[in-house]
Image: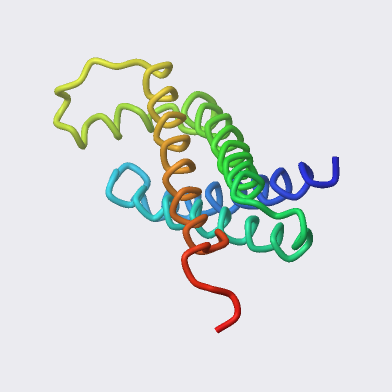
Length: 150
């Protein structure tokens, strides 16, 4: 149970940072520009990095690629789930004009609803979590290519 609490904690903190970033962008009305969402990947990547790093420090003998990968995936998925719930709440309850403004940036070429947008946000977050975890694990995996007694 202790090994699962670490990625959940980091996932919650990562989602809090994602939500704070989104709300800061909304103060300046920049949250409707999709280009700013690329920074979400850096936030998620940093959260995954910190979770895997602490996992390796806490469990140095039992740490493996699989354990680190699981930690990173759980961290990213928790952050994505919480942020997606927040996004759904924000776009339906807090700012009902958000989605029409967001779609206006695409010149109104798309006919989508809130469910489809929420699904897209979730899939983008999950994909970012997988890519971030695969990237971070390259830093923390044990290399078997170099002899240890050099």
